[in-house]
Length: 217
Length: 266
Image 1: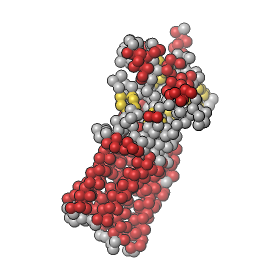
Image 2: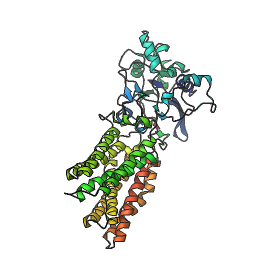
Image 3: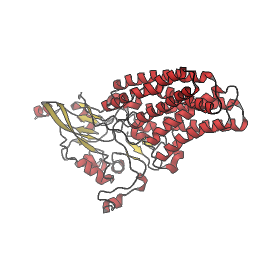
Image 4: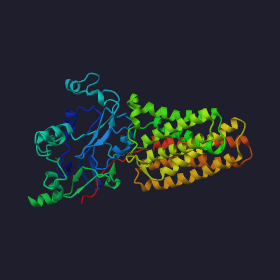
């Protein structure tokens, strides 16, 4: 995942799209957008920072998981098997990105009565276990099975990326040097969050490239 | 720039209870093996220690979201210290039961080693929690280990005193472990800011500094040196309670998560 912080406008459409797709409870957001002020007065600025599971190459959540519920696919997506998870929350405290939640009771947007969509999407398996972003892996898998390319074809791309109004979020195969994300990383300055912890996060933030973009245009 | 760090609420007093009682009980079994060598502790003492370890594990069971799946905890010995702790717990219980049934001291010696392994697993569990700066630092290892031993020695002293008195060296062991805990605590408080821990976590730890040092080490050491049994017992009580208080605070109060960060792009 590559997020261009110079482009993100903080509209939270990705958050809403994620909630719509994955039917997360009201207080749970697998894709959050933080409103960040930085700098020192009077030189203060603001940016919007989408966060969530970083799908680390060396995920501490997976290593600590006693039940092997947290796993890692060959394509790098970190997953949770809801049938195995015991809800010990060890992964929650092991994750340096606050990307995981555990919900013990069904909660709905409008009180005790679920909306038709919430009713349709309710999954009892998610109660009492850890949950987090899975990069819409079902959608990605379905798209790939139809010969589509993740990050290029919307039907093989996570809904947060599809919904982004500012073209700030990009998804793709970082191991393919010709992929959309590889090209973005090659052409732009970037950082990864908490890299010093050695988790090798799969979430890259492009930042500080606005001057270059303006010069190019 | 770091921001957005909050206290984790996933592991509450129930998880803290496992570190408090599990540490004390496992160290108690280790000290049984040493204190009663080459013989056996009484059956009552053995069951008291197991009850304390069991209480800690029961509290964890109360905390998990899917309690009926508790056996899944054994699925990942390859990398999870929680799984390893669970296996060691089974071994610990089995060995103590074997000692009780057969009265063969060798089972208690092995149980003592299992107790030490259990304590080590607990320390490693915290160390592996990369999301919590106050847990993940190396300095948590000696702190949790020495504190568990200090609690175990203190409780053993009290139990033996209630049963008519124990060896004199046990009082001096509390003295040594109390001093060692002060050093481990000092090391921990020094290293915590270097771990890039949120200031709020550092403040919580610094806020209990005097309690841990005074009631957990200084007073117990002083009272142990006085020739009064009642004061010696008070020393053991203080050393025990201060250890539990310290662990409870680290697990539930100082446990600020990593927060978020932006850094200079390259």
